[in-house]
Image 1: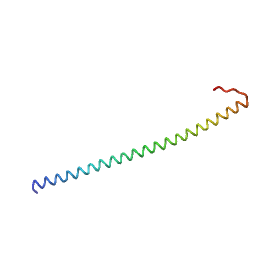
Image 2 (image 1 turned 90 degrees about the vertical axis):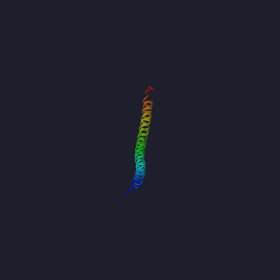
Image 3 (image 1 turned 90 degrees about the horizontal axis):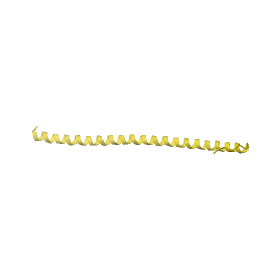
Image 4 (image 1 turned 180 degrees about the vertical axis):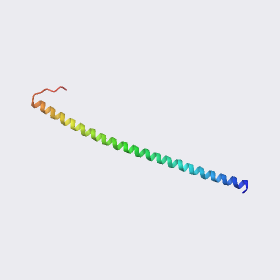
Length: 81
C-alpha cells in the first residue's frame, strides 16, 4: 500500500469515526432529554396528586368550619374570628 493510499484510507476512516461520534453524541443527548422529560412528567403527576389532596383537605376543613358555626349558633356560643 502506497503512502497516498494509506493517507486516503486514514482520511476516510477519520471521517467515518467523526460521523459515528456525532451520531453517538446526538443519541446520548436524545436519551438524556427523554430521561429529563420522563422525570418532569413524573413531577407534574405528583404535583397534581398533591394539589388534589390539598383541595380535598380544604373542602373537609370548610365543612368542619361550617359545622362548628352551626353548633355555635345553636348553642349561643360566640366564636372568635
